[in-house]
Image 1 (tube, protein in one colour):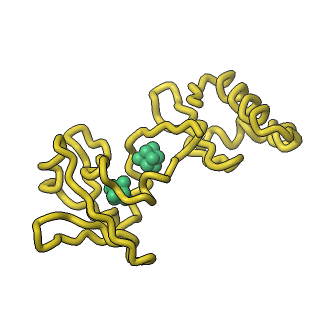
Image 2: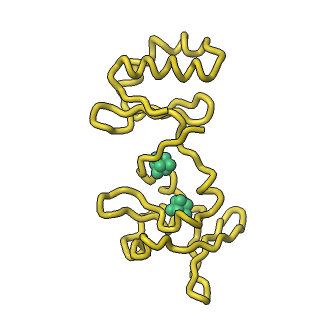
Length: 155
Ligand code: SF4
Ligand code: SF4
């Protein structure tokens, strides 16, 4: 599945309800999944060792931090829990002229719109898109509408 990450941090921003950070007696770190009980021993990535000194983000996974540019960073990316490694945010992404996220397709055909102008743009095409059986053809048809309207489509 194609996957494109803008480092917005959204996927980790509510994980404070799921992940608890534990400091082990030997000084190591572990992430406990509060729903499954699974414990993952994690290690700070060598180039991100000082990130945990940055402010905690309320509600987010206790490990999530922002770097100096304001982008989301997982400081344990190399050893993160399986649930994080398996997550794939979207498989088709539309960016507006300023590079902002305008829309994304997740799963087979779940279309999430960030740019409110897209509701009106896509409305006349919904019927036609809904009749397309083949998923790849549906992707192409949607991308064509978006690109024609000036959006950049990443897929
Ligand atoms: S995976 Fe998606 S939601 Fe998570 S940081 Fe990347 S772009 Fe944002
Ligand atoms: S361990 Fe890293 S990737 Fe996983 S939820 Fe926390 S900050 Fe996000």
